[in-house]
Length: 481
Image 1 (spheres, rainbow, N blue to C red):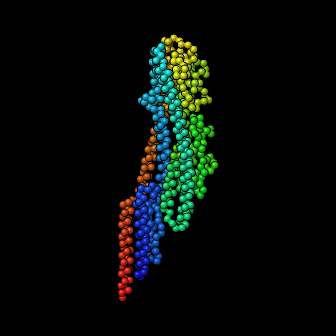
Image 2 (cartoon, rainbow, N blue to C red; image 1 turned 90 degrees about the horizontal axis):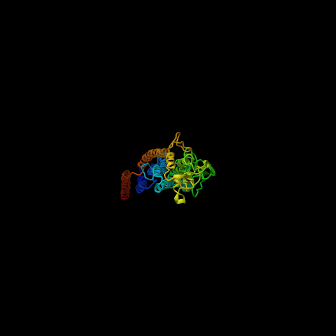
Image 3 (cartoon, rainbow, N blue to C red; image 1 turned 30 degrees about the vertical axis):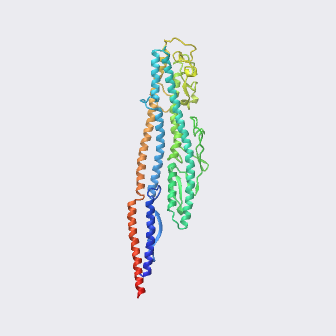
């Protein structure tokens, strides 16, 4: 080896050591940066001697990253679903809670029993009216809360669609920038990190599959089969409403669905094109879970109204007259069940707050004048109809006959079972997500390892410096000859 070759080799070694130390320093500085992947400087031996710097490589495990993204999307989806079911169960309450639906029904039943023992006592009749009103108020509030949750979901869909569209634009821009940087031989690591971070944001909304394309670009497909980005960007459109009501659904056109490039796509939880992430959870809350919750409330409100509008219970009623409980002060209409839980109310004829008379609880809803103050027959009949077994005409309560209390118990049990199943799924998704998170983090920056690499680089730097010094000494010796 000539002296000039030795100097050339040492100089390339110094440049390689310097660049490697820069990469290691960047790794250590970004140890807490989300989306940052460990960098390595790719080196090779030169055919003419010395070291070639081939570029910077990012240590990424595509399979692990894909599994992590899918787990994150599933965890986000399960979290939103479980939150809705928990909230709905809290609205209904449990029997041991004073403001639960079952507790208010029990108070109403107790007040009827107490009033039937003293039908002449106005305060006991007033207690019946108050407890009946409390029962209807809770059903109204539960229905309102369900529709508020559906409204919030509809607004969240709009927000997430806007975020999704913006993120797709950013990924396309980064695709182009990465291609240009590669063509000029520049380092694309920072651009790749930025793109990965945005793709992760997209994935939390819609679980995606990332497909590599030429020149460092990528294509994005939803796991439901929709093309989000492949050269061009998908145009995803959605239109939110101001307020969701029980009558509004995607089937009857009251609520908007999604369109991709102008074509409508499915949004259901089973086969939705963009289901599986937080966006899919919001559609499920708005169009499935919320509608199921409302239908259960409506079925119970219908059963309650129908029990008391039977002329066999109150002889002052004619067929078609509203009874003690009404649908907005009217009799229940078979063609107008949707939203009845929001409209159920105490008959104004017995409600002193609406100008009614409480003695009609004792003498009949349509009674024209007070009757015998000691007659408790109607009050006993009202009490008996609560415990009467009857088959519900709607709802998913299954076959069989139920008393009013049994129907509440069945409904709360169904809601509790749904919530329990959702929590079990959430627990599994959480464990899976945590495990994959740990694996991703283990592939991240290890400061101890990076510092060890820095020591090796320091030794290599010192060796190359010593080589230059030795070459310099030899040159000086030759010049002195």
